[in-house]
Image (cartoon, rainbow, N blue to C red):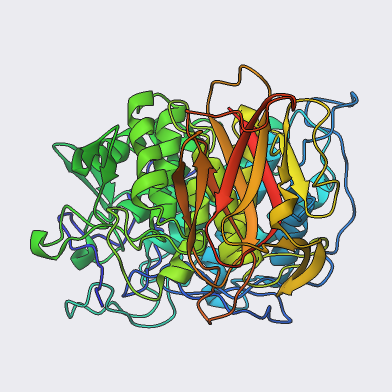
Amino acid sequence: MWAFLLLGACEASDSGRARTAGGSTGAAATSSTESSSGAEASTSATAPTTGSDTTDAGGSTTGAASTSEATGEAGSTEGSTGGEVLPPYPDLSLGPYPSLLAMATDSMLSNAESLDTSATYGHSAGQGYVLQAIGELLWDARAYELPQRDALIEAALGEIAELEAADDLVLGGGPGFGLDEAWDAFGDGSTNPAFTAYTWQSGMVALGVAKIARVLEDQAHPSAASVRAFGEALVLRWDDHYTTVADGGYWWYSTQPSDAIAVHNTSALVAMASQILSESGSDASFAERPPAVADLLWARMSGNPTAGYSWNYADDGYPPAQRRAEDVSHALVTLQLMREARARDWWTASQMQGVAATLSQTMWSDHPARLHGFVDGSEGNDSEWSWSRAAVIGYAAHGDSPGGDPLVFELGRSLLFSSYLSRFERAFEGATVDSARALALALLLVHRPAALAEGSTWEMEAGDGDDAVPAAAGGVRFYTVDWAPPSDQDRGLALPARTSTAVNANLVVDLPDGTDGRVLVSLVYAAGTTGELQQYDGEAYRALGTLPATIDDEGTVRWMRTSVELDADRFDYQAGVPGANVLLQLTHPEVSVSRIEATPL
């Protein structure tokens, strides 16, 4: 087990330097700690009836949100541009889940109702997730008709009021957030007292508040100024806990001098909050430090655009011998900073190419529910099952990165389905998810690549005309001679599926003639053994990717979704059938497939 802390290079005053920004004066803020193992806490299979998320020291959620109906009025469906009729905000499906938008909004409202830091101090990071999710969706939907827009704004303001009611409990004065217990984050004996301010909890809240402030400012909402002032105060509290180095700078891990360490994901939270505030009416000084935080991260990374990159959890201020690659759970924030850096042209398309390679090659393990444990591709332990659930956020943020790869978006959708929605048997309609997964849903909606803006181009569910020879090119189907008739099958979730009747059962992707570009294929399947998905080239089958046994961390066979890319050398298997008919085979002795999807890029 490894412990993390930020040991310090900076002067450790607990009083924030007063700095005028947008009319507010800064007070000290606190950050939250991360778990001593650096691991995302496991998510329980059963949603607690209260719907509350408990948050570990690393800000990870432990428990799914309540499945009770979200309350609140439907709210206005008009955008912030006036009373004109706007187009509806485009929805997105995921396998059997017809509406990620409904799941996202219901989850935001449900979690907002359940979480309250003023009543349960450990909820601060969870409320930060909720605010970030609401802020992301509302900002992206400002030119669209959005159901429950007003209810979401009301919920966000309620969350902020609850957070403000508890923001003064941290040592040295607020606003800020931390833990209500003593904790030695890095296992070096420098135990911090209870209510130490940490950049994790404080930054999670600050980033959420900043995203809400941006929305309110755009709408000229009467609460815009007060919300922005709260966000400014949360960032300014860290003014005296920032270190400048030759390659950039970083905000400390906590307000304690022993924690003046460059932990990239916690510093990134304050950086992103500060940058968004600077773009939402705050003083220009809020834009000074965020680029330096991104510069420091880049200076400490290794790799190249083709092979991908690696970076450490902690660098400056932490003993070099104890540094190690960041785990995929905490990378959910660091990856968001990279995406924000690209959006502002601090980073280039070439850098995003390398980030995409990291996500699709190094972190991806070919198991859609369990990534490699660390961003350098190294293995961790059984906690990777839960770490992977948080990592969806990082994948979703890079779905539309300029210079990136749309495959990352599909891998993110498969990861969310396999590691969380199927694993915890979330209902196809009416389900809610916990606060971290609500942010993942929001980011998937916001960051879809153009080719997948409306979901997969072609989808086929078992039994739904899945054996018909196409009348026109373009589609997916079962090669039914190798498959039993469709039937409903229960793998935790009940889905219609066909089960193979022979080893090496086949599927077909029917491409329009002249489809020479990339094609992504995704399957919802269940199998008790590991096999491969292969493509016939006219002479032999070539492996496209592993189809691992869909056995979860408790040993149960469940539905999972995985995504691969077709080989460029495509043989037309069925002359006389419209289009280029690409033959695929699954090498399992027995496998059930519920859904086939394909999308040309």
